[in-house]
Length: 209
Ligand SMILES: N[C@@H](CCC(=O)N[C@@H](CS)C(=O)NCC(=O)O)C(=O)O
Image 1 (tube, rainbow, N blue to C red):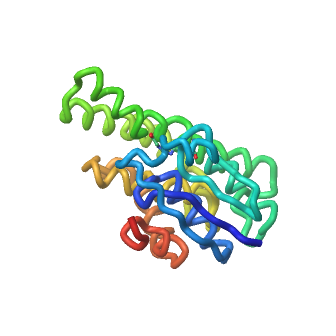
Image 2: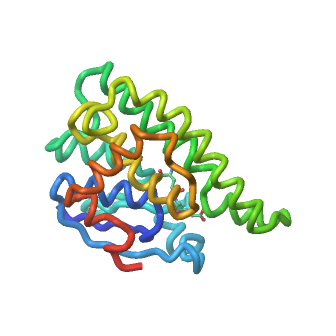
C-alpha cells in the first residue's frame, strides 16, 4: 500500500501520525506543508483537505484526515501493535486520555487560533499566557485521570494512543516553558515513550521542516 503523509514538522497532530506509522513499521513518503508560509490555505491543498489542516494521509489514493481517525484506520489495517485496546473499558479510558489532549487542549492552541488572537490585537505575552493556561488546565486534569491506571506508559505497560497524543503535547509544553513538576505521571510516561525508536524518529528535530 502506498502511503503519503502531508504534514508539518512541528505540527503535533502530524507528529501523532508519524509516531503511529513508525510504531506499525509502515513505510511512507512525507510531503511537508509549511504552515508558517500558509501552504495549508492554498487552493491546491484545500482541494485535498477542505479543512486546511495537516496531517492528511493518502492511502492508495484515498484521502484520510483528522489524526485520530487516521490512527484508528491504521489500527484497523495494521493491527500490530494495537494502539486502541480491544477491551471496551480500556479502550474508552485510552480514548478519554487521548481526547483530553486532542480535543480539549490542542485546538485552543492551534495556529489559526493564535493568529486570530493576534488579529484581535493581543500581544505575544498575552498569547503565550493563553497557550500555557490551556496546557496547564488540561494537564491538571490529565494527570488526575491517568495516574490511577498508569504503568510504564500512560495506560498500563503498553504504548497506546494516549502516549501517541501525550508526547507531542509535552513537546509543545516544553517549547512554551510550561513547568511540568506537578505532572509526574505525564513526565514519566513521556520519558518512557520518547525513548522508543518509533517516537524518537518522529520527533520534529528528526524530520525535515
Ligand atoms: N483535529 C485535527 C487538528 C489538526 C490541526 O489542528 N492541525 C494543525 C497543525 S497541528 C494545522 O494544520 N493548523 C493549521 C492552521 O491552524 O492554520 C487533527 O487531529 O488532525
